[in-house]
Image 1: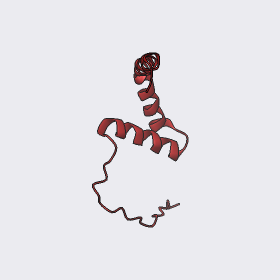
Image 2 (image 1 turned 135 degrees about the vertical axis):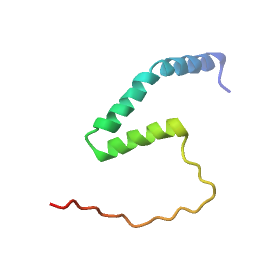
Image 3 (image 1 turned 90 degrees about the horizontal axis):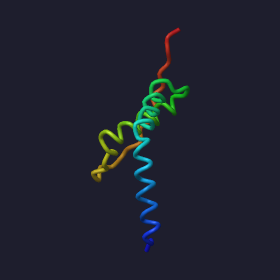
Image 4 (image 1 turned 45 degrees about the vertical axis):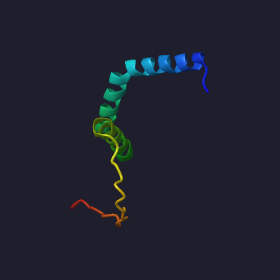
Amino acid sequence: MPNKATIGQGARLAELAKSYSDIAFNTLVDVAINGTSDSARIAAANSILDRGYGKPKSDGVEVVELPAIVIQRAE
């Protein structure tokens, strides 16, 4: 069981973290738009969606893995 000091420190840390939420969110938006890799942009976009709509819930529906689709640009 945490002591009062630990509980107080946790509350203070949460308060401090919340004070940076605008900066953190703007950083996610910047990475989603300007990130240099697809994986960084996708991760940032997923984080934004998770915060706005919550993480997708699994309603006991079976997830089926489908083969990847390859898209090639015409040259």
